[in-house]
Image 1: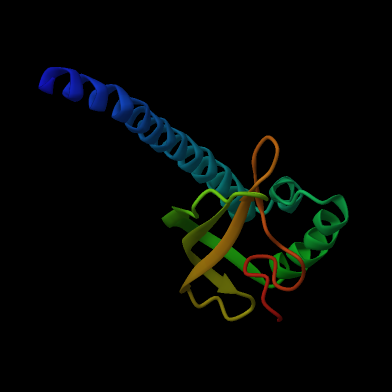
Image 2: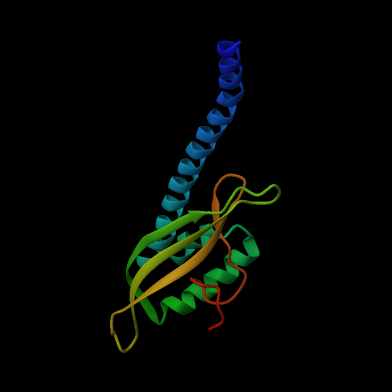
Amino acid sequence: MLPTLALSLTLLLSPACATGKQAQRTDQKESANLGARSEDFWNNLRWQYPAAAAGAIEDELARRRWGIEAERLMGAQRITDAMLINLSLDPTPEEGARTATVQVRMEFYTLPDQVLRKETVTQTWYRGKNTWYLQWEDGHPLTGEDW
């Protein structure tokens, strides 16, 4: 009876363990995809390619508005370096898009003073149908805050 009980418990618990491992692999893959997408976004900003960076905004109208704000920013600020320092996936929701928080440490200077500054920027990204998108509605193109 005891070997049968042990076998039954093993069979019952195996799918749960497999599901947990599958979820972990999915999270690792999503983290890697988001990290690459975020790095592309920041590299495009660093090299002054706002049109390419705007691809991180899903909605077409918001993408155009973001482009206007990014051009305004780039007229007064130059990013010299950006490094991803933290990426955390939020738990998978029952409904709606999955979200994640990305923190980036950027070095920049503003014109005309050209004093190098460092700042940590926190952004929210969400999973669209095929890729990750920056959650932005209005305001500063990097933080979404009023400026």
